[in-house]
Length: 167
Image (tube, rainbow, N blue to C red; front, side, top):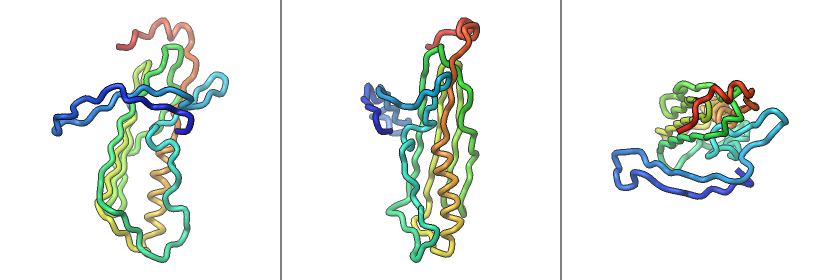
């Protein structure tokens, strides 16, 4: 997102193609916004400032992508014990568009972190213009889901004392 600086601190499993590549990042700047007692953070920082892909209501030609691909994001954000989770994005179990696109979101949390996993798989590269209204609706739903926020609040002092230290 704008105003955020990202520094790669390490990359794990770069030589083991059988394992997922893991990049550890140090993020500085203003990732979210504060509204008094609450902090609003983007659920997935990789798509937080993405623009809608299909804004036109009508289309005269087919939609064409250069290649089929899969995008898998896993974002874990750790926060201080002075904050607690008020709400997280809801889980989106594998929704599909005509067996050609699959999209899912899962969220896990601990007292001092949350992990959001997002999977987008594009299997076909051409979508005919007669399918465009339902294709656009699917994409809009997916893009709206990508923009859901995590809401953190100031944790009560008793909850902070009872929370175990993060590892």
